[in-house]
Each structure stands twice: as C-alpha cells, then as structure tokens.
Image (cartoon, rainbow, N blue to C red; front, side):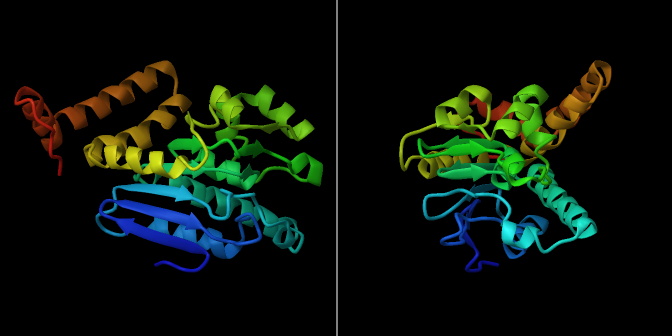
Length: 255
C-alpha cells in the first residue's frame, strides 16, 4: 500500500502515514488524497491506531492551488464533496488517528488535522486558514470541524484576516491537544498510540463514533445515545476482562 507520496509504516498495531511531497510542503493533490482515502477505506488487518504526519518540516499546507484553478464550478463542488468523504473516513472510520504536526498546518491541512482525534504540535507549527487572501472559501470541512473548535465568530475573524496561530496559541484554542518541543511530536504520538492501542477496540470505536454525533443531538437524545453506548460496551467481553483485571490488579488484555 505504500507509495512515494504517502509512506506507510506499520509496526505492530500502529500505522504511521507520512505525507511526502518534497518542495510542496506536503500540499494536498488528488494523488495524495486518493492514497489517504485508499488506506482508510481498507486499513490493514491488525492496525488499531494511526499516526498521520508529514515530511520536510511540514504537516500539510493545504490544497495544491495549481490543481484548484483547473476546475470549473461543478468540478470544484464535487472535489469538495470528495474531501468531505475522505475526512469523514478519517474521523469516523473507527481507528483512532493522531496528528503529529509541525510547520504548515494550513487550509486543507488544518481541515484534515481537525478530522483526527488527537493533535500534537511542535513550536514550528503554524495554523492558518488563508482562503480569504486567495479569493476562495474553505471546502474540506473547516466550517464544521474547525468552526466547532474555535466557534463561528473566531473562525470568521481567522479567515477574514488570514491570522496565523502558533503552537501555544493553538493549544489554548483547542487546535492542538499537546504543545511539545522541537522534534518531540512524533515520539509523543507513538507513545500515545501505544497507549490507545491497548484500549478495547469496541470502546475506542464508540468514542470515535458517538461523542461528536452526540454534540449534534438534543440533550435528551444525546443522553439516550450515551445510555445505549454504555449498555453495549459494559456488557461486552472486553468489559468483563477490564473488571476482572482491575480486581486482580493487572493490566487488561482486550481482544
């Protein structure tokens, strides 16, 4: 499955996907988007956690504008909807995804990072939505995912002014969950991935599927969905193993 444009390294239950477009700050082209889509459409058996990162000091600088200008309105709309589909696979595919970020996390790169479940940034990280300065509008899901993190008011200001946020500012705003030192993002991602991989796959799956959807629901509907998830997970074999391990003072071994 590995290719020059998306390097895939699998070590035990952890797959590391490295976006690799040298000289392009890992800008997203159709080939790279398709490679990411292919992986998340059929992850290799045994993979329980994914780390998504970039190369040459950058995570992803967004849509390759040299491709954008070649599309008409219908083509751009369909391309945007394809982005939405791929981002949904990242967020709701069932595998926890960790972003190890540095350098450019811009435009579509920020949209993709916002679809992942754990985000780690280094001091070089720059968060930006520069579409307003390009005369265009976001199309990869930012109005939903980034807007939920920042709030509509702050996201509007971010787009209008082209404001850049650094790693520490991103931590305060929720664009990243961890702000670490230079060269430390991937190491922390690997440490957290190993920890997450030891969780029960059912509970990981439910957290990924349910929590963001509950946010869309009314309070009553959300509470009912929470009860359903609790009922399914707490009557599973993994729950039995978790309780038994707790009583026996040992680390649980889930399926």
